[in-house]
Length: 500
Image (cartoon, rainbow, N blue to C red; front, side, top):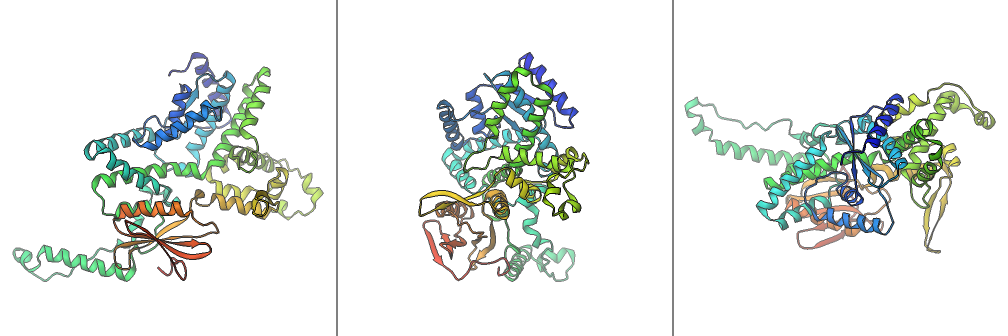
């Protein structure tokens, strides 16, 4: 729906202010939608068209029911694309639209300049529509049930990708076979050109090449090094039909597209919140709107007991960084000062805060953002703490206010975007073309029901039994699925990368 004239003029005003502050975005296109359309877009993760699958309908039903019962309300949605598309909810107040537009320009600037988004597809709306067309064509050719089952298997393991491959062409797919850089050369007997096909039969040469390749793989292992991109490994080595390869490739590309958003949730929301507060309070709010703005803003950044609010944490950290770099509270002189009174009144009028937060926005992810800029003073000021379950009282209790423990807990939650680290270590396990995976246990055990579902999904894609070594009940275990039943056996130790 085309924006009303008043909102179109508001967008021009917001964009002018954002540009004056140094925000730089792709062209931003706002569209007005009603609550049902907004819930549908949210179910589709913001895209107007996705491939057909039952999960979208399920998520729409959950969102629709939640909205009807007053449990949630989606004010805005923005897509990392060129141009950047964003949605406004019909029926919101003019102040809400003003806040949302300023927030969206913060997101759009972050999408364009943060290094973790540098290799994302900037024409993803078109790509998603193309993916939908291809999947629908396969449904017509092979039947809905067959395609749905394969999509279910792919989606069950969609997060098993390599976060470090997001910066590479084709998301590092070529690295999965780095061991093949030296091609196999079969020794040929000397022969005249017209006799070569008789003395060196092509079928013999090919059989010999395959035999030498098998011998080399047995000597060096397959893969030569552990592969974290399990989707990529299956895409290159699983015995898939052409349509199955295409569908798996679609899921993998979309998973890599969304990966930077998972890795920068705190920064992204904090950056957008910083700019909507700055733009509105300094430039766009009327006196009559200040109280309502404060009410709406506080609802977004409210501290939620027992939960991490990325809007609040990101916003306050960006403000803290700006304050520290404006007052010179960084560098060797600041670190070496142990006089608490002097530190409390420290003032070096450097004025580097705004420049610093733009630099931080460009080069960091949530993990490095927290690691580098979370300080003991920040934790004390904002009353951060860790909590744990007390089994005797059957209640959650405060566990620690120590800075090291708070930081360690946050970094642990953000490592690998919150998903388990699992690698392929042997694609020819027991010399039977079976697949062996290893879970890098970091103190949190896998949910066995989820692990079994993932193993079954990988098994159906790999077409051979699949095993996963992990820790269960503090004991090394090897979980397995052979296509018909699950197994679990105790082992001496979980295989390490070096052992493989």
